[in-house]
Length: 186
Image (tube, rainbow, N blue to C red; front, side, top):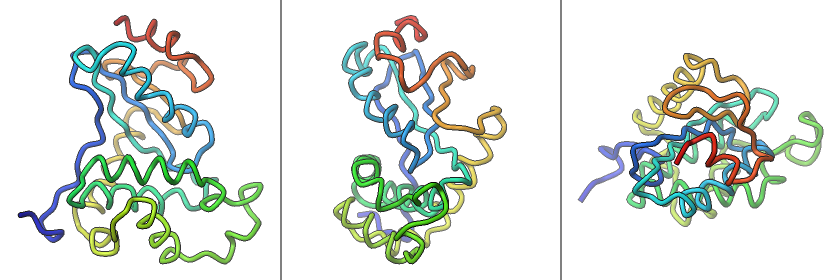
């Protein structure tokens, strides 16, 4: 049995096909929320044998809790439930986005929230206590990796999409999954 002290961060992937879609998402962005909601339907449309979807994080500084929320999601992926717990946490954050975002990016009731309160709330959404996983070196390394990987690929805003490791600026969250499929060629 794996304990939190030696648990790695599970990759957030869907499917296992040759074509690859990387979705660079901010954990509190409304446009990323829209894109996240289309990933599983896209996979269902094209088939898990034809596509691998990799969720990557790009924290945008105007979403002030983005780094904290992203770290909590990565911590969820380091728990026993792995990627499924992380995806559950992510879906929960998007469903309750107002609890993790400021009004006009600078004001509102979230001004008084602490990182511990946010972590407890995301733990509830994930269905598991994330306080120990939050402290893992592997979670810190994963957060740094996502940031570095996004920057190395010229990704600064979310959502951004890459098909087979090439950023496709014409893909957007407002497009249909059928339009996304055309970009993928599957």
